[in-house]
Image 1 (tube, rainbow, N blue to C red):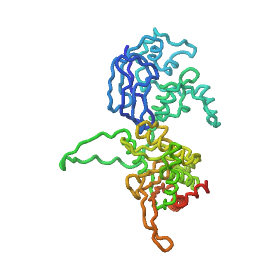
Image 2 (image 1 turned 180 degrees about the horizontal axis):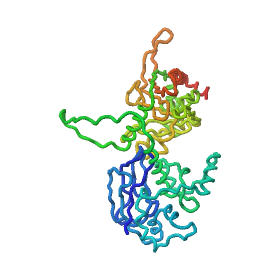
Image 3 (image 1 turned 90 degrees about the vertical axis):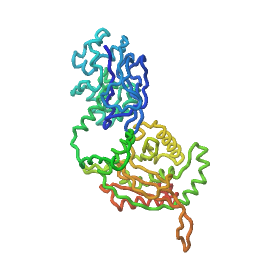
Image 4 (image 1 turned 180 degrees about the vertical axis):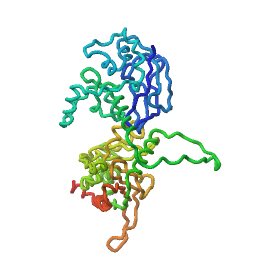
Length: 448
């Protein structure tokens, strides 16, 4: 009997995805965990593994399609092997509930009768609520702060990372608690159901657009995954966070002299020494000095969550839209290392090769529009962070010093803060610290 493979749940907040590439052809023999599609969703491009096995007899989708959870992707014929029979059998959760624990595994002869249940993960029965002894041990270990091993194949771990699922939170249904792709998919679906059932708050949806045809011709283009994710994220941030934006100009004359003096040294190490790379290091040092800017506000518990790590998101303009890869542990890296990593992440972003993991976990964000000639601007905070620094274009200006005007290179800085967590005075002190550190680069070395 034919097997149908449908698009599984891809993680919380992910309802649809754009199909970039079909990785199989008619007649191909597909094994469990083989990659079958390349999708773009939530600003990331990743491959989807198959949870069934067999020979592809029909492909129901094509490149460029927008896919929804549960949509039919392929039809396959069982290959008649033991592996195919296992793939065609009902999910282990259902089988375990229907037979004693000591019962032998299903034989290939029994597989055809069970085939229809293997269609989508979305139709799999709910996970039993009663935890196993292994689950109890895992829970105690997590509570004690010990790492809990997740028994899963590398392909399953990769899939979990790509859709934003913590593999250590997934309960495995296989022998010895082994985690399968189906387990990850069910965990993602369950998380999404919880999100959908949660009470929603906020303003009413905007009214529909008016009819523009009386005013002239129009045409429409569908938003890609990056634009949809950006729109949702910015709307959440703007609706949730009371923004206050502070502006100042920093004298980067000495900093530019430093950059010119050492750029050849950096190039020899494989780095392009930019003003942005230096600013990233300075901002990380500033966050150490002003920890409230490296925090998040928990309004439900009325607490401020201070982060003891310094991961900076850096906005990158790409053909698909704005992406924000995250540079981790900036406080532990020198400027040359930062410059190398910045170049590598920007290249991956423009090539569409960033994973979700590489865009998660930022504690503060920098948006650099100087390359476009922009001066001051009002950046939008990336929720749940409490601040974002906008960097404009440095320009030579006359500055009155010691009774005369002198040419100085000055850099516009725009700091947006979450006024629920950061007061204007706190933001002003942080911004002034950055200005002083840029004016006197040795300050960063002096204060760590």
